[in-house]
Image (tube, rainbow, N blue to C red; front, side):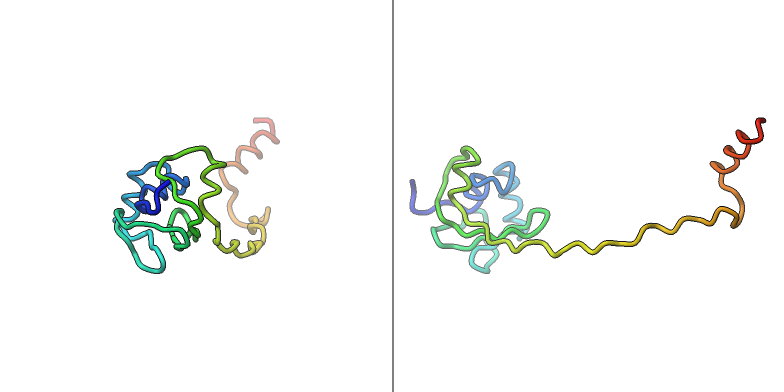
Length: 120
């Protein structure tokens, strides 16, 4: 095991991104930061660093192990500490307001139901 690894390789090895090229693209786009600084794909990661990666939401990972190759999910889980805060609780929205049955013109669906009811 090495004492330092490129950030794009590490993100790919711990399964944050599916491919190494996706990890490299994320670094180039500014979606990855190490210890609060946006980094290039070639930036080295050491044990104890904090890596923030924007996937669909921001993931905050503490580096506890350095991996150069992608292995099983169990091995990947030992190489980082997930510090991502839990998502906020969901706010329940009220049900959609339905149209009053006797208000306004009938819809196409209503007209077909009326036709079926009358037996035409």
